Length: 292
Length: 189
Image (cartoon, chains in turn orange, brown):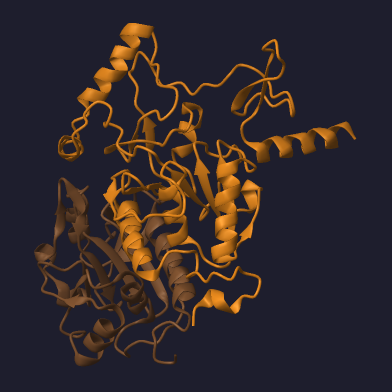
């Protein structure tokens, strides 16, 4: 008997726990463990068709499905926000298929699936952060052939990437890449951090949490284990700099969190707010306590 | 349902896998595994790894202590895995001594380093050498006992190629992936 069929709260449709069948999970699980053993290396996997279009987190959702346990408390964010379409629909998906508890609080979550941000709140040991990845190959825009990029990783031949960064400096006076800024994992593989802003890159380094990456369309899984050296590529005379808009959040007043720019009036007046909605709420609460 | 390895397959396997994720993520630290229905010669931890990860695409090498009808039947019936030789094995199970030398197991190729064997070392009676380990997943250097550390040092030198190890003992599991650096602690005598 299927586990889910016992639960009356669930829809008429009966799913295996967390949607994917056991054979698919085994295949993903083997890929995930090898990925953890070889930090930053992209392990091919036979990605399944998921009930959502490519680009909406089909890779992340497969990794989450393979990792989820009934006791998990799941948080899903899209660009830092818990209440955007992608986050809401993925959260609902796992409530329906795995019946897991959900939260918006980073510190309460045991598994966080994310699109394009790392939460501002420091992650803890054994928390799992699952990234949705569109293009897992950091060299893809420089070299379209998979056979070549595979050889380049095998030989640690990353000169092309450095030339790209150098050309940025020659043209613009600084490295233009502001998101999906390439990193070197455990001193070996150049890795795509998924399209997070480069402001988030330092959070990947030596993190106590387990970082897993799933690219559904491109059929790749990779991982950064906890306490692993993750270095953003740079030059001695042009060191890496994590940056953000130089403003304060207009809701909570925070000046150290990553900000989204929003247009607030017809004449184009701009305002800045925290991209991490949970962090913003926490800061607002802290501020009101101080005022009391 | 009594004879199946897990009483509730998808739930038990998810919990088992999470222990494997934790063990692999934090090498050198012991994690707990739950009991399951398994052949008596296998530890719960070793049986859990096989049941959670193996299917009809997995080549499994059983060392002589484990290459018995009870284990073969259990493994093939529940997972469909293929009993294989050393050279093709994806998963290897045995005591330390019976698996030596390790150089026949596959270590992956530069383009596909993941095409390497995962070794499950059953038993704890090997001659222990005090070692200090460091690397991904290890916050502060850890002291652990390993059999013949020179094998693990050599294995780490192959990185990003190499073998990945799980040490299993009843309900406990500990991992030493290829990324772990090993230093032998010299005794003062």
